[in-house]
Length: 409
Image (cartoon, rainbow, N blue to C red):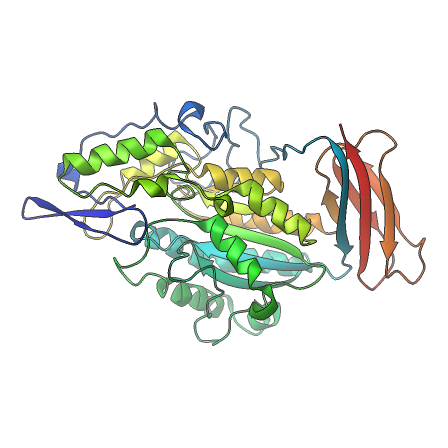
């Protein structure tokens, strides 16, 4: 979105690449209610309106937020709408619990307080992964694909793009927090950053560079974590939300946000990234998100002024929620005052997923066949199916490939 600021009673615009971020002083705007715009009828992406619980911005961390739509459950498991017919997929059994975490930070102007809040508690997440004996590594990028292009960025003080379990193990919690805080602050260069948030596109471009960035290891769980106060491309493809922001810009004499930013490209879609990762063999994908997850949270975000006293619109992160749903990930409210509980839940989800693979559907009875490659004793494993989840158990100390064939009805 464009940045619209007020000075000496005159509103002027400071445009960023792509779309616009609106910043208005409290005297410029009255009560803002997008309730009529944020439900299913306004969202061209096809996801439902969000009515999650425990995320009202009251200052307490409710842990897992409610899911998108009316279910209000803890953690999302909305399911991917698989087409009927035969499916063939593969994943890796990994006895050493490897997890490759891809952190995507919205670095538009309004997000620096939330980024600092996340940095302050990230040691909680890493300590829990240690307790769960997860062999993790982490890369970081931003939602700005114009400058950063989804590239893995350097960690402050380490001069490298991959932060590892070994790096954290030789540092105190305070030192780890300093790495995250300094790195995050370096993502916010000021008003020149892009306000066109494209976290899913950034993830897609990041994995495209896997041969050189070191962010992906064979046989690892891939666990993206997205932090944003908006949806993909700000308003997630919603015509109604675009019209609302355009009207706001016109009313303050500011340039109209670029209509092209309304359009979600293929790489912006949760479904495209989900399908891409499965095709690449990373079916053990767990995407979690810290987003605006309800109308109450959105109103809270919009009532918060930045350091200059400007107001910013916020949008429910429906594409990010949908990606979490496809991957049985976790959604946490950006409005929580402390992200500790949410980060603990992210870690628990990663730790519990090892060697459990979610099929695209509940397979037709009798259609599932399982075969393995790279196992020294071919029958040294047990496959257990429960609904859509297939769990592999084995005493093998080496990773091996599991090939699946089944039919979706």
